[in-house]
Length: 107
Length: 121
Image (cartoon, rainbow over all chains, first blue to last red; front, top):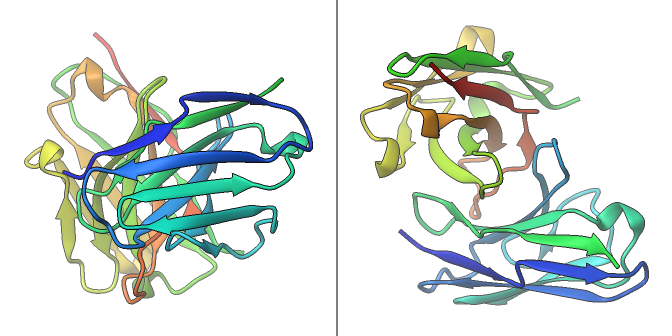
């Protein structure tokens, strides 16, 4: 199975900050990498697919980059509604696997 | 609008089975696939398996092989996930999520709200 590792595990930031979350795959996955946002008690929400494609309806302050084994999710200017947990997920091969999550908290 | 509506919470005893449903609306059910993903308390998301709602083909995680069965009823636009031989570690929220099996990249763009399954004696 492909292991997905995110860093950091948690992050404190302020409204307006620029934030970057990284995700590393245990083997190359090309750009078969998706990012999801999850708020407490809610289902995950797709933000970015294919490493850098913004899902319809997602604000443009979210962006993704990377290929191979290293990927990043960037939020250019944090808004109050962005405080949540973020997961990366590889769709290169089954079993699809997720990172452990990065919890973004208000400083 | 496109949505997936899941069945209600379940409480089961160890050794029992549970069957969770996921009813699709707002799109052509047979043109998409349905994934099942679970999340134990405080844990990461865990992929269990997938069904192509059009032709019924399935893929399962080896971790659940032999215990999980994913089916669909096209007349009801509903997918099902049955997990057998339940143990306490299966206590989790179970989500269904849609993908497009004809797309070049695979991603889960619509999710159900989740079904809580509690396994307790």
